[in-house]
Length: 320
Image (cartoon, rainbow, N blue to C red; front, side):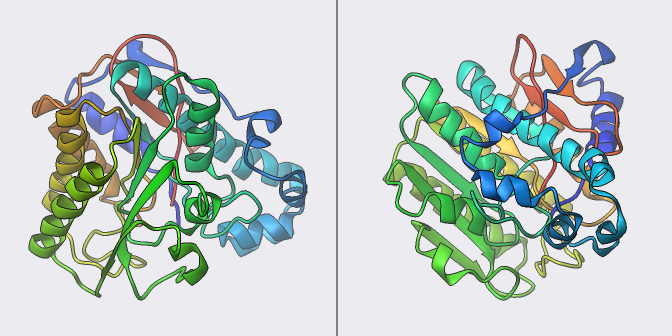
């Protein structure tokens, strides 16, 4: 499942003077060559059919639009978001952390999309790092969206370099038993799980995962669809619980000196943007991130933003 909340988030964070207009740059769209690092040519060709995109994104009216409009209004922003996640991976390695406000299309694998996920940005970011950045040979995915991250799980099923921790509502989409075989630390939650139990499990299992295998990069899929009242997540976590969750994961990463890339994945309520902004501000206040730059696309309603610790240019994403 996926959604765009980044325009609102960036304005909330700007209100707190965490970023300024001078910190915003243009994002880069993932090219076909980039996408082919993971995706099959056959899959990318299928996205040229509006019916296929309507099915993947779960937006039936797209079926009636000519594909050039679908490409421009839906897939191009998603490719920009995907390019942002790839770039954020490199920035996280260079500078210790990066936040892509968006991204986290964790239901998409190399040859199959779904749940609003058309491109496998998490898989792409990790494979780009493995192939192009010296010293990056192990990755840990900490997936805390309310839904199982079956896309990256299918992609890394037989890859011993990638450790996957996935904590999700056991009763909801996608229920992909085949993909679950890739999860090294599986935490299945019941309907209505609340803050106390949830945060205890986040701390126990994120610490446990990082103690079990020390990665060179952490990809943190920080979905806000765990929020109480979310129509799709089925969990009962408070806004303060989400802020604390993100702090726990960042603290675990920064204490160990492991670079962390955060993507914001799914969230389906109006207050989601404010919560993500509050979480980013809290990470800054706790000394877990420094505010130097922010990167964005800035054109369509799927405005995407990426934050990283200091320095040059970048890009960004939205997600599931």
